Length: 74
Image 1 (cartoon, one colour):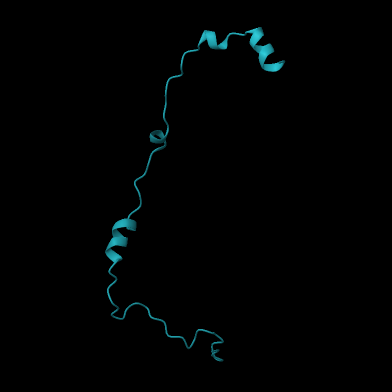
Image 2 (image 1 turned 180 degrees about the vertical axis):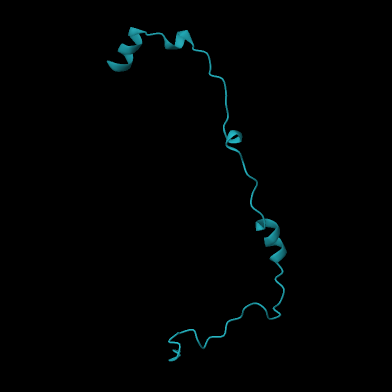
């Protein structure tokens, strides 16, 4: 419905502002307990894990020409 004085489509609509005595929400306390506060702040230092590097294994990193031939030629 258009009110010609205000030219607003919502001029004749009555909205419930919540001030009226509504039935209590049975889940309101649960929501407030779960979502009522922000989570605790986690510092960046607490999100990084530092571990010492493993020592180099000389046998593993040695160059073996026969292995190269087996992997790339045959």
